[in-house]
Length: 149
Ligand SMILES: O=C(O)CCC(=O)C(=O)O
Ligand SMILES: [Fe+2]
Image 1 (tube, rainbow, N blue to C red):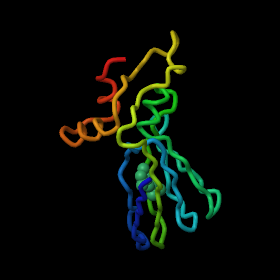
Image 2 (cartoon, rainbow, N blue to C red; image 1 turned 90 degrees about the vertical axis):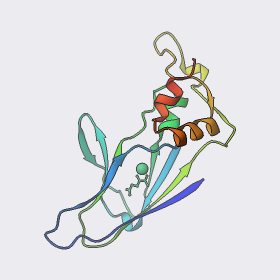
Image 3 (tube, protein in one colour; image 1 turned 60 degrees about the vertical axis):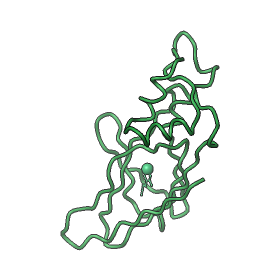
């Protein structure tokens, strides 16, 4: 598990909102806590951004990441998301990022491959994927999609 802390400064009155860039998490799962339940988390779906209302200050949001998309053979999509700060206080979020072990084999679960759901990704070791991405920028889907099913 890895922990990422994001801090977005307060926005002065009248200034444009600050935006953390659009991305999808390379991980298996990320669990997100926003300090004091500060709003601003958005997901991209059907061609537009949707604000996710933070239910209360103790709420956690679980994001499906790239590796989950591979393991589920595309059934759980890796969530495209971003954060914006519209407020006059600093926005702090803490993401707990869960990944497989270094030498774990990653690939679609056999039960999730059938006639209606053909195999989208091959099987590879997590460590080989990380090394390949370091050597040449590519997405998780390009890497596992290039391996034999
Ligand atoms: O601050 C947020 O709401 C999102 C943070 C995030 O997406 C990340 O750390 O990967
Ligand atoms: Fe993220």
